[in-house]
Length: 306
Length: 141
Image (tube, each protein chain N blue to C red):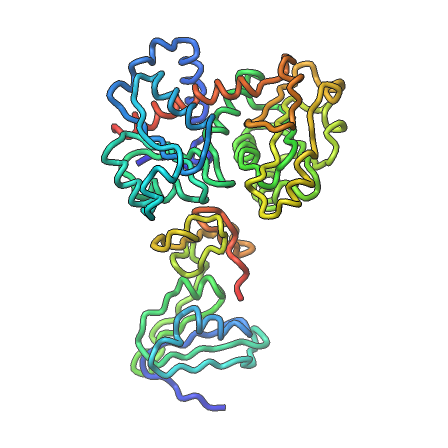
């Protein structure tokens, strides 16, 4: 049974196909309005989420399907001690596809090993979040027309930021991509990603602590939030949380066609006054996320039927 | 120093000096009721010093454990006092329930029935990663 656990489970060609379907959905929504009639998506959210869960649910409704599920672990049998494996086996009897978020890393993989229906990883702790990466990729594609020859800046928490790790892995498969990694010393990109992804693929990158210095080079600026829930130590969080705040004056040396992205939710790392700048793309990312989830649900259900 | 030769069993040879005890424990040999000799710091032309383990019983030896701890060893199979096979060992691609993931955020930390599975991520440096959370296995100790 085909599932999506890690963005690298999808080949470059499959991502291109998903983007093509998502673009077709945007152009011809009526064509897809009944494609999942009679199908059920189970959203198993063992950890709170607004955007991702509602995005999956909206995606399924727009395909004409139905949604069942829960939005926190306390309202599921997990509170009684049920294992992820048993939950997956049980839900396989009720639904056609699962979208799962879980605080423990690897939980969706365990679910996919036990389910008889496709499982989509909707975020497993600080590990993977492949559908966010699909949303990011569609946004870059629609704003820039492709993925080649881009200089992409990642700013903020590059250590714990799962969206950053996944997007770096996904973009590393395209040609002439360059990365600028902007973070405080304590939140630098983990060395194994630099070694296993960047150096292995011969991808040029530079590391800096200065957003201002990096700004003029960038085609994409991917801002991230310093996440309180990833720190064991509150003191470290408080010290680092305001490392980078994007305000209008910091954009004075930026390219006219810069694309500013953020996986959201933001706290204060992007000033609200940036929202009206035509370069702000983070709410477009949210919408693109829904279209890519629609394309993904269609693909996995189609493959499951074979 | 004399160690009796064995009749039916195994001689694990060319163990990197100092890793004999680790291998003994990881193979679970401490739980087996048979004659076992661990010989440490034996002079070796090839290695300078090496460890050797002799097991005088026809048991199942987990070659994956050996490949993980020390892939350069040789396993000599003895039958009726004669050497019948010399096995060379390689790093296994998958390790199943050999080592445990120590990441407190990993699903294996809370769900006891899940097998701890690691895959070989970097052959050159012998690095294994948990298939669930991708955490690197701790150094062999």
